[in-house]
Image (cartoon, rainbow, N blue to C red; front, side):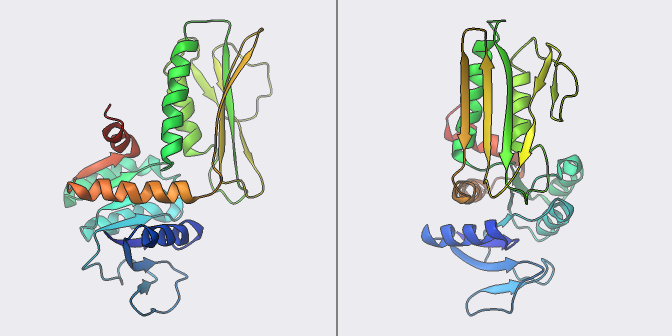
Length: 256
């Protein structure tokens, strides 16, 4: 696969490294702070100025305020796109319309880690079990590095919403600090931002007798990068068209 990388920060650099290690090529890098063109590698500051003639897919990790513009620009150039940028999902309708108009393809996810997507399913099954035992309360929290732009994380939202839909006695999620005694129907899932933590998400089921804890901890960003490359392969393998999420790919991989 020949990949274009949109956004050449920490994630972009790791994606380039892992892609090359896996036998893929990277021929285009787009970043507003990009340096001059290097031999065999086209580096540009904008998508409009890049040439995508031999590119099979683009992987986009930028910022919430530029993601939609990037996805639409790539759709207009007929480039299948995988995006791991979060914080723009309120504009998903606009993106979907453009993808349909251009007969393009995009796969988005708040977290591309295969481990996280396994963790979701383990946690949600645990929530289904806990639904049968009213003595178990549920809650959780997430931790990320202090450079992360959004809070709660997209991963935390997907995890908490999945739990909420599986425990009948929980009716709403509270992400912010509680300044009151929690109500029985509230699922509390706060966030912490500190240091260089790549990401950790924990879910708890607690009773007077014991506590069940389920945690996923990322050691580094390599899992996210590997998952994004796998998503690009999945998106292009059958020339899929439309708007997809990581869940579409995982259902295929898990044969669900």
